[in-house]
Length: 287
Image 1: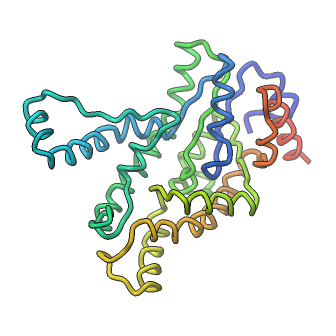
Image 2: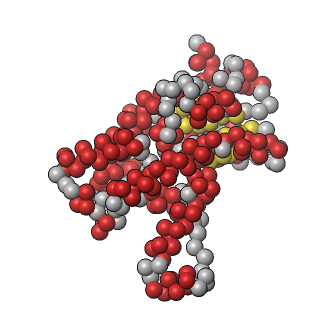
Image 3: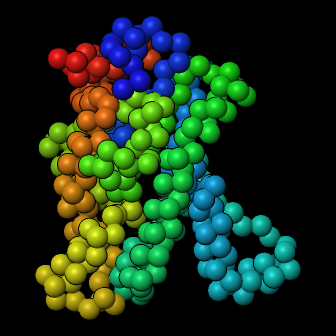
């Protein structure tokens, strides 16, 4: 780790961390709190994906839908309107909407091959965005003179790396420059995330092999052809399995850094609280 012990973390003039774990456990909450101090640069991987690497795909999808409306088609063909996504750190809906859900087109689903193509675009964009972290660390220092840096990774980071490979290029790059911090949820947190997802299912990224197995298993269990699949029902069915699939991958990644608990994150109110929690996590690692 880049900090030898808790005292080294407390004394450093440049704290650099990457937060990872399941979505909904506090990564963006912590990153936003740190950014608002004025001393931390907040690098959002999902925002980078949606703007730098997938912004054109997202905008083209909007235009494709707009071209189906005669009034908008005429305006687009004459360059009279401008269509773009308004993605922000707090609103990633344009990205998740583009990823979509596989299943019946009459229910808003995508053909499975098209869905997989968009998933692959996301995979490549996420890897590139993670590897851009060093570039943004340099920008934070050279342009903004910010001493501290937090990389707010997406929940799918564990799907685009090989946690068990000591030479994985993405993890190697992150571990070299930052302290890797896993926010670990409990079984109760997982159950709440599943309930929340069930109320409002949203698109997400899955590892290709996992997705292929889930797509086949779901249709066999339900006795459905691809065009009969209810997209929302499929991703509800898949979500809890995806969380279980990700847990050991996060755990393997955490061996490169430290672990904090979602319950501990919920108690954090100030940057000083966060500094203390990371110091505690490093001390636990040393035991």
